[in-house]
Image 1 (cartoon, rainbow, N blue to C red):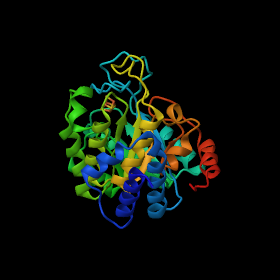
Image 2: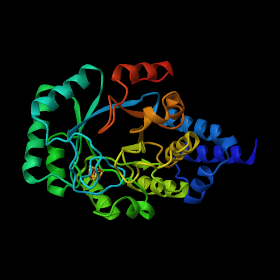
Image 3: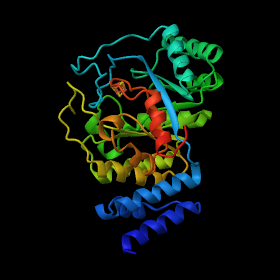
Image 4: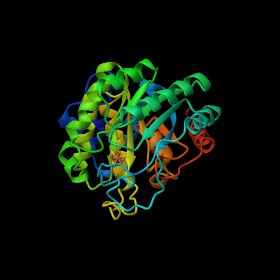
Length: 326
Ligand code: SF4
C-alpha cells in the first residue's frame, strides 16, 4: 500500500472510531495526488455509509422572493448591483408557495425550503412568511426549512415555534476569501446568524460555494470553519457563473477538485448531510454517482434559485440506479 493510501485509511479509521482529524491531517488529505483521489473518495463513501446508511436526503426549494437584493455578493445574479437580466418578483402569494410545497410532497420529496433574496426580512415580510409556514403545516404537512438571510433571535425562536426544522445560512466562502466576494456584509455577520440559529435549537444548514477563485487551501479553510459549527446539513454549491455578475467569466473548477473537496468535507463532518446543491447538473451531469458515492448524501431537486435542475423523478431514478435510497 502506498504511503498516501495508508494515510487515507488511517484517517478514515480515526473518523470511524469517533475521533476528529486534525487540520494538518485534513491538509494532507486534500492534497493527495490525483492517483489517490479514487481512494480518498472511496474512504469518504465508507464513512458516509457506515454513519448514515444508504439514504440520500432529497430536498426541494422555492425562491419565494427573487432578485433586487441590496447585497453585493459577486456570485449572485439576484443582487441589485448587477445587470443579470433575471426576472424578479416580490414575496410570492401564499397559494403559490403552498401549491409548490404540495407538488414536492406528492413527488416524494421530504423537505421543502423557503428561500428569499434579501439581506433579511422586515417585520412585515416576516409576519407574511410565518403565515405561509402555518398554511403549509395545515394544508401540506411537509418538513419546512427556511433561508431568509440575517435574522435576530426573536425571529429564530418564532420559526422554531412554528415547527421549522432547519435554517439555512451559508458561510459562502472562507474567512480569508470572503471580502473578495462581498463588501456589504462580513463573514462575522454570517457567523453571527449561524450562532443565533444554533442557540435557539433550530437545526443548522450551512455550507458554501466552491469555484469562485478561492484556492484549494481556502476551500479547506471553509470546511474547517463549517465543521466547527457542526451543521446538521452542509450544502456544497459549485459556482455556475451568472451573466452580468463579476464572476461571469470565472474558470470552471475541475471534476477532481470538486470530488476532493466533497471527500475531505466528509472526513471533517462525518455525521452531516452533505448536500450537492447548485452546479450539480452542470458539473456532474454524468458523474453524479461519483459525488454520491464519494462523501455526499443529499441533493436539491427540481431546480435552484436562478437556474433549472433535474426533476424529482429523474433524481429518484438516478439514486436508485446507484443502489442508494431516497
Ligand atoms: S447571495 Fe443572498 S444576500 Fe447575497 S446578493 Fe444573493 S440573495 Fe442577496
